[in-house]
Image (cartoon, rainbow, N blue to C red; front, top):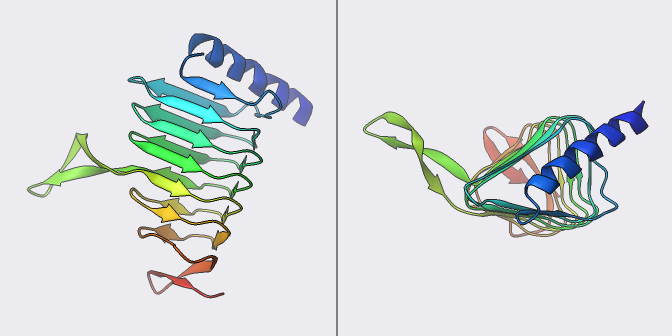
Length: 175
């Protein structure tokens, strides 16, 4: 069954690539399951190393540039939403339901603007592990060899390798 899912995923990916070959590149040995969804808009681009997905994974590049290194694994329901830039280093693992955003909606006079954004690039180093339900927000830099525990929200740079978890609403280094 998994082989069928990979076959369908790769057919979808090749079809998207044929329509967007200037803005989409990937390693020939990448493995994508049937749930992968790629969206390229406004001259956005996606560059994928040798990586793999499981289940539904969405990558949106709406004018921004997504770059994902080799041996990156993206688990079910993970989502990368890029208006500016998102870079993920080699060997990084994304758990279920990981969300990465390089933008926030602008709020003007208490009103959320649906088509106005504050943007800043996101950088995630090599050999990181983002656990289930982790959200990474705009402007964050995470260096190599960082583990982020489940249900964490990352709003600030993580510039020291180690293990981080949410405690009392704050991301704290525990190892």
